Image (cartoon, rainbow, N blue to C red):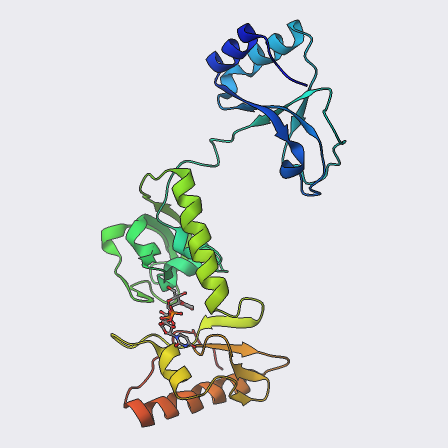
Length: 277
Ligand code: EPU
């Protein structure tokens, strides 16, 4: 269904509704099925009552579309327009964290390790952290400047428990954030063994060097102890290729560390946290 009356089109604009004429609904559903109709994207929630009055008084039937993931839409030109919310509440145009896309884990874990990737680290954005301090047995709030965030290391005590964090993120256009996310996703997919069980990088990078490249250059990709294996994709990722035990993994770590030490004279430091009884 098409809205052609110029008075209605003008009123939609006043109500901050973006009219997309003849939108293909196939692209808005997870099934990828559906015909065409006018799509009305609502940018300002306050205007919704007026919008619905406008449609009703002009006898324009409508349907309301969410994520389109449980929906089978008919083919051809459809006899109703479709309304969709543009959700500003979930998209605040705050950037800076794009590098961490795809990193599994919790916000607390990311804080503790000062997780980072692709030129950013979470510590740079921390305004304050609420934590339970085992040392004082109290819930405390630390300001960002009271915490030191270094490369995969922080001043949090091992028994501090992160409860919440306030991050101060720079304003960035949502489309630029998405673009950054896409780039990081692609880089990660092409260089890391995402489908396999791993703990990310096993060793920290020594200053000015890459542990992954060093291990790779030694030809150690595929080196295994039991089912613990140096990834074929990224040599600083060690994967559990089946039923690896901690013992297997620790033996592999020791073996690789020794070989790197022997050739490069560099002692690689663990990046992975080891809880060994
Ligand atoms: N390289 C190889 N062979 C390999 C792996 C890497 O030649 O098997 C080369 C790459 O071609 C590249 C260089 O080594 O020229 C660096 O590799 P990459 O870009 O993959 O980065 P990285 O230094 O190995 C670090 C972090 C990652 C983070 C990436 C992206 C550490 C220990 N690792 O890896 O973080 O995702 O940069 O920013 O700092 C993690 O913390 O667990 C982790 C995976």
